[in-house]
Length: 271
Ligand SMILES: [Zn+2]
Image (cartoon, rainbow, N blue to C red; front, side):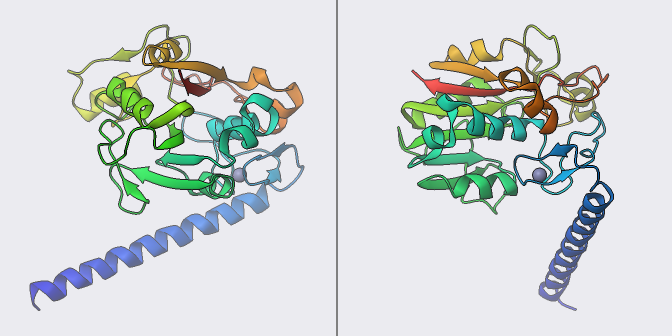
């Protein structure tokens, strides 16, 4: 067997494994949705699934939608677009050019319909519209977009301050950067340590092997320092009924020392 043939076989096996994994995931999702159908206490404002409760992850109880996998940050974002006039779908997305980093498929399908132009981007993957490093987007001209969305991206990049400058550069005047970041509860100042290189140390200090920092309550100030005004949105911006029904805050607080129970979405407008 020549090396070309062996390479083709390995490619086929990888494709088969990916298909099998995706089928298993889909089957589990359908089973979860059926098992959790009644009573209809909670509702996902992203995909409209309703049921008894959401699914748990290793840190948090009952926070992820079994149909679309939305988490609290996604539902807070959609709630803001639905409920807050100044941040509505109409104002933020209609007739706008939107660049979305590392998007979840369900969020793309919601946002793509509303924007005039919508592009997805990622630094590592090839299956998005653009392959872009958020810290150095030399391929993108100044003031090319009205909105840049980056959820849980800035904790991964070596220099997040450069990323903030780049995002500001490609935004049109008064454009919005919309961020979420993992924030350790009650941490005043962002923690980062460039010497923390081994993945196990990153996991211990920052919560995940590929996180380079854990942000604190100073995140809005850090963003404002780069030429934005920041509006932070959390569950307190909505009625208790919406917050409860859409689960915009964990029903049970995680006791993990690095957990982000108090999730926020930051709407940063270019000054
Ligand atoms: Zn959902």
